[in-house]
Image 1 (cartoon, rainbow, N blue to C red):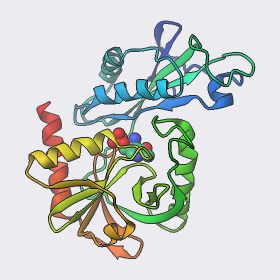
Image 2 (cartoon, rainbow, N blue to C red; image 1 turned 180 degrees about the vertical axis):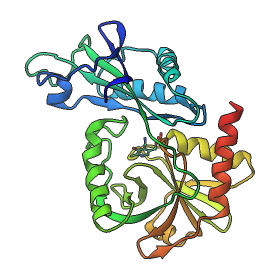
Image 3 (cartoon, rainbow, N blue to C red; image 1 turned 120 degrees about the vertical axis):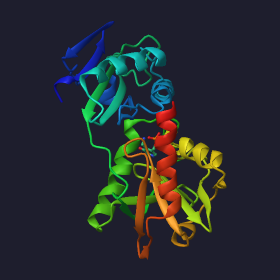
Length: 286
Ligand code: PMP
């Protein structure tokens, strides 16, 4: 990633094109203090950009880093960077913080430790309504808060998700449906999961072990406003096998229909289609 795709913030100044190089001595590289968020620009819209900016600052604080930029300023900086694109393009917006040098053996970042911040803008096409995926159950699990920083969108959580995804791909599936520590369904390696049964919508209730996504919350709100019943509840893998429709939500593609979960097949159904329509109708009305 080079040139106009990058806006960096270092030492109080924004500048283009010059990616700050993480040094071997940096806290982040050595001790893993990296957080990020992902938002999207598509059809000329940036749905819930403010929420993604608020969340990346909360993620930084969860890793004991002091956020360098207010969420309000971050929104403005992103909007400035997006001027290089046009509404026919879709852009992945990734704000990131990382801990810089904080001295030998400083496992805990100092309160005044320098923090790196960058926003990467990268063109990534938005999948259309016919792009679906398939799921397999993974043997890996989501950690609990006592095991890892599941209260942050932290890079250090993603090697676990990468091995789930690699395992799923090796078996010929698109993504992995993962359980929490108790064995209930949590999410996938990259998104939140929904099941539709007899016209009602079900999704795992946030229990602190998985990322209760911003896109997830938006879909729940839209579906309820449209008169649908949405249950946030404890869910088993069988609940997904028994479903009439399954779909995934996340910032990258907003909603992705699922056509198979291991040996169970699904059609792309009316609730999934309606949720997509409601999402973009809401985004346009903002
Ligand atoms: N779960 C995981 C593990 C993710 O990486 C993502 C993508 N950020 C999501 C869920 C969906 O979250 P959001 O809707 O906030 O993008």
